[in-house]
Image 1: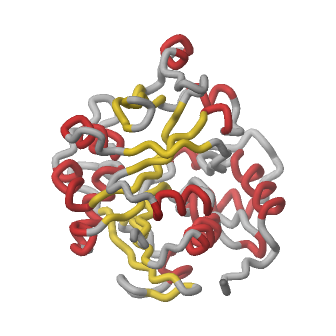
Image 2: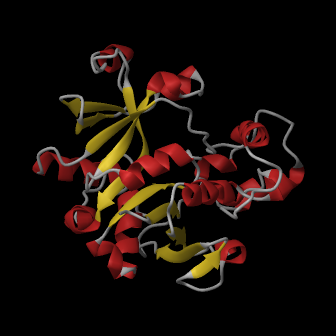
Image 3: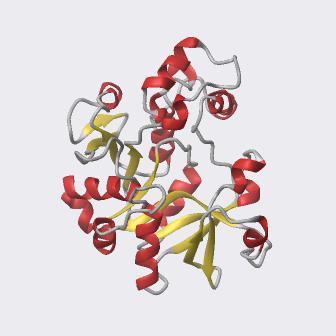
Length: 292
């Protein structure tokens, strides 16, 4: 059974550097947001980062082996979760670090498909096993993480009901919509669809489904698609959804859709810090109890 989680934390957090519209954020936290990876900003109880809560949910869901993909300046992750490259012990989890190196002709990382590819290159065991992969700046629930850990499908993703996401309308309308074959398997991903186009992809229950970038992948099947992922013509990055869609288009019924309807807290910009703090205060204890 899948007990491995790869967390993508190597991005540059560009939008987090923009000034907030609210003056409710402390200078200390605002300064952190300008220099730290988003998942290491002190948003939780006792000043702990968002990453703690994602790891907590992962442990509750039954994961044991965690690979965090960081960039070359991501040394602060090791201050929080262990100095070694591999097999640090953090509250019962085994944590390893893959580094997403930036090519010499670029100033930014090469995208999420490249991040996963570099992880499976640096940790060869990932090339022959199944694992879950997710963003570091979304707080996925224990239930969603567990669904991907336990599914018998080699490749799967959480297919979220767009109406269940508690974001602003503008933000929700910007999400890519997924098209499903027989409402079960991934067929296509439609980026930034118009309202009319999005409505044409409603499922039999009248729901528009979106991906929040949490997948279960078969390392052996995905390897070549990660390695050979084309560069997005506009964003100039190798994007994981592109690699996954290429794989799904060549393998019938390869990417299984697991329907969910729940919010996925998100930490994209400084204004999200207030929302995340309130969410954590409401849904988590002051001190996380890792002994379970």
